[in-house]
Length: 77
Image 1 (cartoon, rainbow, N blue to C red):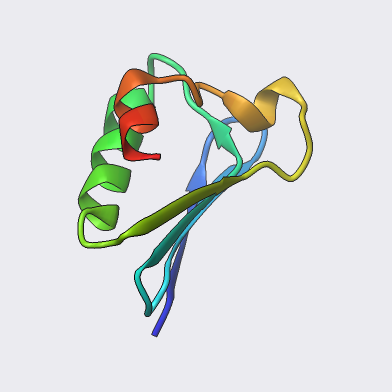
Image 2: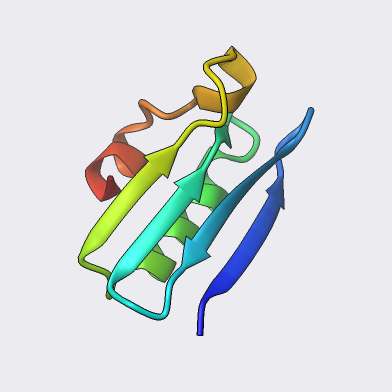
């Protein structure tokens, strides 16, 4: 069974999908200094047993990809 989590990030939401398979998907990203550590810790924890991690941006506006270059998150992706 897949688990879908929505995380409020200011102007919108980012999501992750912990698939019932070896896949893990992050959809959109808007991290800043106020939420970066909490979000990256959760994503790293929830994806630790997954083999394939992907990021999907619904469109290239800054508020959908902000914080994607976070060192902690980049290592996970």
